[in-house]
Image (cartoon, rainbow, N blue to C red; front, side, top):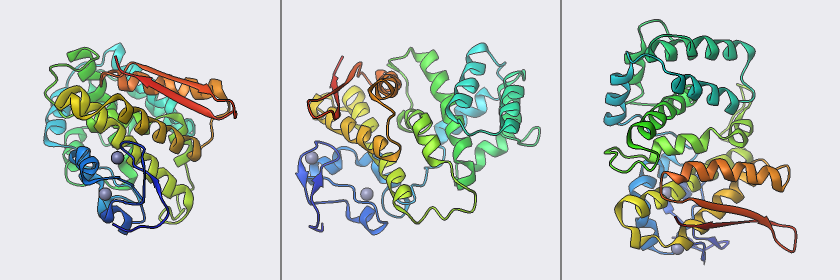
Length: 296
Ligand SMILES: [Zn+2]
Ligand SMILES: [Zn+2]
């Protein structure tokens, strides 16, 4: 581990100069104070570590995700599904009028597979082939589509297993992460001209950095909820949350405290399913926005 500028451990928030070496080679400084804290989130971090770290590459659909999506293909569209589509429209503020019309037309389709084909301009009848192709590799132009598919799964799992996801047999990391990545601040910040070389520039580094910190945060929350509650004290979740919050603010500054609270509420809703219910934000004496978190 190299020993240049110190920063905070992305798990516990303690100052450290140690970072993930594999990620550092891709230009991402992700600090871990100890091998123990690196191991705590390794189950999920390893999927985006090293060559996938920057620019951040979304992992392909898992076999479970593919099977669940294929099972949903012929399901009639419900108002909940249409709501999921409309949420996505809200979260892509720069979506074109054309894309907006497609989203709307999609929500009026009778079957879920058709709804997605229309929404994402896929040829009729190609839903299952499209889903299967994303199990191997996710081309960058399909990032929005894979997030939308994972949002679909997240909504269905939450309705099937209740919002706490207790008893849900599937790994939740990437479905929950999809919501983090579709927040308006992130989608606005990641809008760019098509010919922009995003391997360059501090902004794209910051976007990758935010995504890594969001993976750490969700991984900690899930470990606390489902795998090893004692291994993840509240202060770790708070430290990871504060850092994700700071990354978000750096990516695109919050307008004011009210705006930050609004964003926090949506984060709080996401983390609710991982057993974290109380998140708050306030301004400290220096006028800096500070967040708080207590477990349920
Ligand atoms: Zn640590
Ligand atoms: Zn790494």
